Length: 194
Length: 197
Image (cartoon, rainbow over all chains, first blue to last red; front, side, top):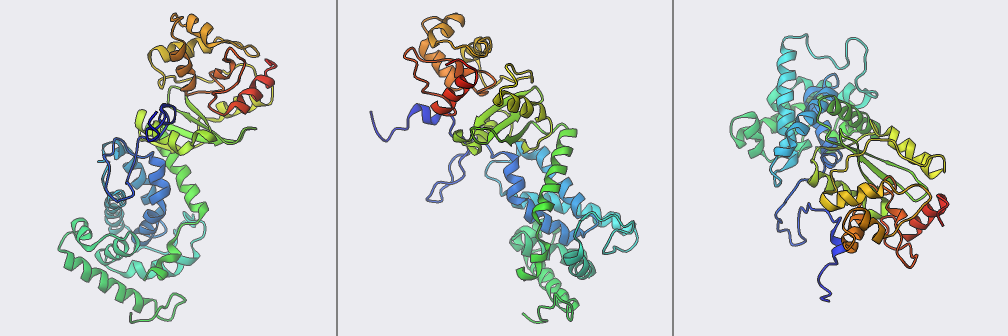
């Protein structure tokens, strides 16, 4: 028997899905990983983005709606798609919904007005960072989040928010400058210049 | 800048809370094609997976749960989520079986992972009573293909629902308990539990 040939018994339950071979060359994907891997793998990054973009009142809802929409569309997602960029695209649509809804509501506040804490420990980010983020224009806030929290390149961010990659880079840079200035003197003060 | 944003990180409690909420929403929207959880057993963690039709897969840890989940994603649907919802009955019946308080399983089964002759063999296997054993020859005969000993053994070896569909009750002519999904030690332990050996 050829020793290089895998035994038939060993092949019976081996995973069909293979993402990469050691050389970095992509194999033909015949199926996608279980959606649970998408949630555990990308859930934390998408939650950071949702928190930074829509704030403590709406972050959990935005995250849940993003993953529910993703679950619905998942069987049709191409197997070689960039999953995190795809999730951010969906989250961005939810963020626009929240943003438009908020334009018709009173000014965003750091905590829910009814005292219902959607987030059990809002003190850290919701108490200090979110008020500073909330002051940024929407486009600056989302470009900062998509670049620094989701790691999207400016070209892909431009595809999402409109305009050019250079404009997205400028919006992000302006956002960071404004954020540093806004956080001066707080516990999150990291200096006004890079 | 990343150090500033570190305070946005989710805690484990956040992740669990949101995951549970997603699983509930997915189930109510009809998007939870395969739900799974693991349960403790005397033989290590056991993976239980179900569809809307019933329990579809049970796997011992030695079968590699990640590989099993990938296989379910490929063969049934990639809409696979961890949740305890809908698997409590199966978990309870299994626990009762392992502690000697249950002889037959009542949870609905989804046998879609076995087709053709393999499905016929599993159907016969389900008729083998608690505490008794059979042979591959007898099972092949019961499935109306008395000469198909090897395909019968293959059907048992690829049983998607060990324990519940009792492939451990099939023993080789020489009495050796080899060739079991959970390992020969587990096979012998189950037969001992049932008083079959």
